[in-house]
Image (cartoon, rainbow over all chains, first blue to last red; front, side):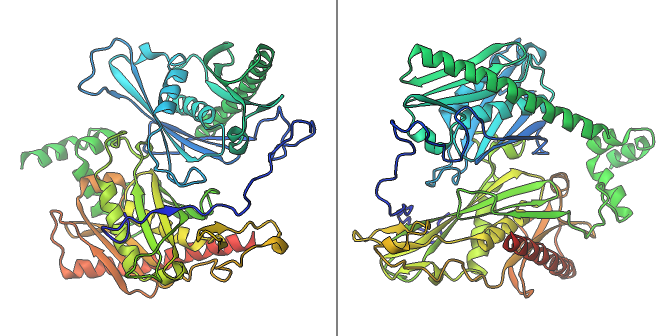
Length: 256
Length: 303
């Protein structure tokens, strides 16, 4: 680890000199633009690619702006010895970050909260009864965190599951919306997430029009919430089209 | 020795895939006798190698390298530390190698792979002893502040020759490293000088205006070979490593001087002639890798 054994010097990341950063928008200013120049209701361009990891049964890579994620799927394989007998298959999820994913160097540890969110978002979509007694492992690594990490992880994971040939009712697409003052911005970046008043994250199966997970934090009026949910639903179905075309491309490439 | 004969009889009527799984060693030896490997490589040939620099925007230097399917992502983050009293003019490099559960079916969360700390230690030893980086160049203010370069290498896909790919990505990340311009503020803390053209408002002179890039001397490159009977297989895949267990890793620098040599046991005892053959294969490979790195670096400069 450290090049000099026995000495673990405390280090810090040098921060910019500017004491206070100008707020990214002002309440009175209706015409503020987002840091990356997007419209409020415009998502970042999404890029998906399946088959990123050869060692895995299925895998996918997703890139939304600076958010970069790899998900590998292993199995169905033998469950852990200590597990009780189960008629339906088990789903095991894990999300971790690289040490360089965040602007300030982290510990690169497991993200317990996101692991459980990923599990709950996916389990409703997977036909668990098709692999009784066994476990499917879904492991995600966030290579770079650029905001809206968990929805990207969930979308990428459902693509990796499809790549592994795990039976699902539908692809799961995830999108989040930030509430900034009186405005709703979709697919927020890290900078926007850090100054948001509220956040709404929805994952759904667009062709069945079913929501698998809905997380709401912060302050919301019911009107705003309705608007945000509609925004998410629309974005999810568009995202699912992109994911589907990625799968089709991969399938036609292997046929050639 | 009943078993090999049995497989010999069956091989004529068995499907290739079944034979490969049931009698992996026989399967490989049949190929080796014809001087070819199951992936159609000659014994001494390494797999296709690619490199992309600057893959991680949140890091100060990064590189993604692939040798065959083996994929490594290396990134460097620069932090500031107070240098120790023994060496007030020197910075520090901390190297860590990670095998996250995504990279291989044998790694599970909470149970780190056994190979990871071994490769981590080999990498630190090789990089720090190769003389590639002069730690004095990492000094900022003598006795007060110096850079601590955190190099983290993540294995994204494990398919053999992990050390070779990790070392290549580490060297590439250092060639991509761009040190931020910083200055010392009144509290004795190092702060980043914002680059947005506010030269007039600068309170403090930057302390490292000149030293944005490290001078890299004698880059280390490596090749891992498998020794099996009289055969030498360069750049093994994970399957080959699991079947034939004697590995030799040679690290040479760009002027073909020996930096490190690892032969961690194994059933095959190497004759000196075999060791020399490994070194000769590595010498060839170093030229290839140097070329790949040079092309990647010059590609970045054009952009």
